[in-house]
Image (cartoon, rainbow, N blue to C red):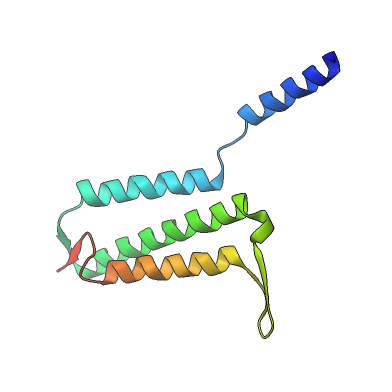
Amino acid sequence: MSRRRAKLRRRLWQRQERQPSGTLLAATLLVFFLAIVYFVAPPSLPSFFQRLIGLANAVLAMLVVVFAIREFGHRFNRLRLPMIGRLRTSQIAGVAVFLLVLAWWLSPWAPIEAG
């Protein structure tokens, strides 16, 4: 019994010292980035800078989705399509989220207007 308890304690101790995951890091960066955009940034920027901020936001959102699927969805990460071959769902979802967020930033509903 004592060996089992010692192994259990070692496992629990190792889990607590684990480095933060990529998902957590990317999500934290995305939240801080969006907070800065909404609360600190001016209401309008030149179109180049507005698109640059939108591109950075889209990349961060894509990273959160890709890391989350790779970390939590190991079992469902591969798809086989007849004409294309093997695809990872993390790549497909990452590209979809990237395009949606980028389209949101290029639309009139973006948090910062281009002007």
